Amino acid sequence: MNKNELVAAVADAADISKADATKAVDSVFDTITDALKKGGDVRLVGFGTFSVAARAASEGRNPRTGEKINIPASKQPKFKPGKGLKDAVN
Image (tube, rainbow, N blue to C red; front, side):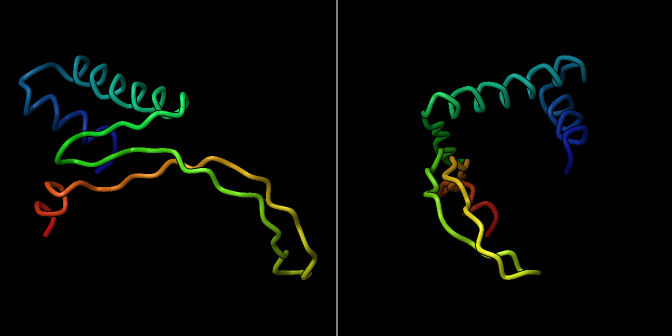
């Protein structure tokens, strides 16, 4: 399912226009993104938790040349599915 299909499904399920569904879906994505940018978590009980994990700097190798390269530290978004989502999938 892509974003357009998600918007169409939300519009049908909520009995709203696709324009309103697009605004709703975009607002949810923006709100989750803003919370993660601020270093917070987003916990949706039964669905899952979005969080940010710090990734330490490391040293890697270029597979073509074998040359050592430095990989800088970064922050990675993470998602841990909740029990309700796991149960629904299984």
